[in-house]
Image 1 (cartoon, rainbow, N blue to C red):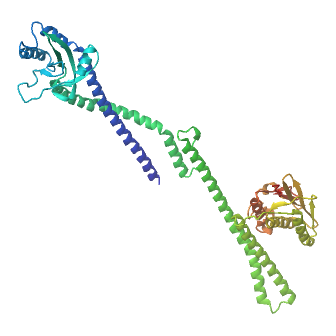
Image 2 (image 1 turned 90 degrees about the vertical axis):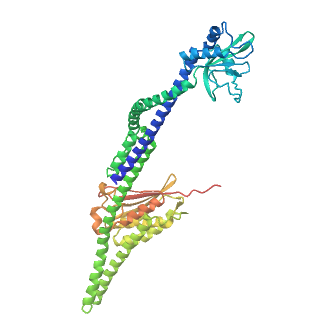
Image 3 (image 1 turned 90 degrees about the horizontal axis):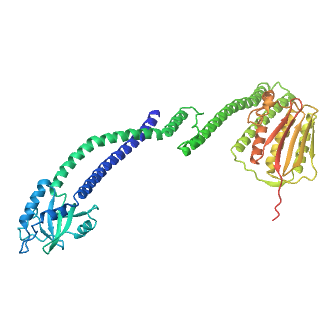
Length: 501
């Protein structure tokens, strides 16, 4: 299980690492492409501003004494040939075009004008006019006469020579520079990609892993806590769960751990009680069974020599043990049903005083055998109680049985009933030996009594049954006792509330 947990944790870390690495590489590639694009745009804008007056200078210098058109109206090709060669000697990227006022390309050395099948070429004059109006201070791209799908930086100026008007349109980054730029771009891309990008990516990865380590600190702490809890450290908890980055997970884990620990403690307690049950049941069942078996064997072996009185005596002993065994089994069955909540209280209003009178009358007969006085003390005109009459009767019977069991000869037992706010208080008092303080917390536990009486008085299921009956009525039973001064068992029942509607 430990290897599996580590494997799952490693898978999570690997996934986070792969995703983060891919994001970093994507960011690095995007950064590189954006940098190249912006660098290229910066270069173009700078070149255009530096050469914005190039077309004007060309008109001022080259058209002095020369005109772009001959007397017959044709283009002065020798002039443009010399002009183009002079400029290309300085900058091979420059392409010069003679443009009419309608945007028609009249002449350029870089174009083939001798083929009569070539269609007339035009350029969009809007960027040209915008450039001239801004005095070349704006970054504007114009048409590339050699490739209509491309936009290039340019310089342009309008001329008027001998009544001939038009534009000088100079492409500042012609096809020659495209070829050079392409090769430089490849070289630059390789350098940037192999050196700068790798260094940048490694640096970002280093910072990223540090960030992941820091951000997952609480997660790793939770994982370690969960692992220790699984390995048996039931007291381990996540510290300061409310301040944790994963507060919902931390709080829920702590609550879950508390619940699991409580359940385990309860299971341990149940297991201890189960062992006590087995031991006590074995003892208490063995005793009457041994008596029954012993006297039956005696009757079988000596029935010819035993007198009738002796046989009746033995049969009475067998019957007493059988009755005790029957009561014990009945108590076990009753308690198991109460504990499993198979018995649901059927609540109804009834007079607790009348029920108490009947019970006192029955138990006075039992009390006479030990010369014990049993009397009822009840307030006048007590209201009805709202409870299950049969279960309440069973609870009072068990308490009276317990009182008779421990009250000495000539003692006194009181059944006291009084009204208390919205409840009726029922108490059973005796003047028996009392219960030690250390034993008062366990006398209502199943199969547990004070050591002083546990061997002689059986399992002690009577008080445990009373406790379960009170729980079904959403109330509790308590004991007030002092050694050698008797004991009082008290519980409360709700009054019957008459609806006024």
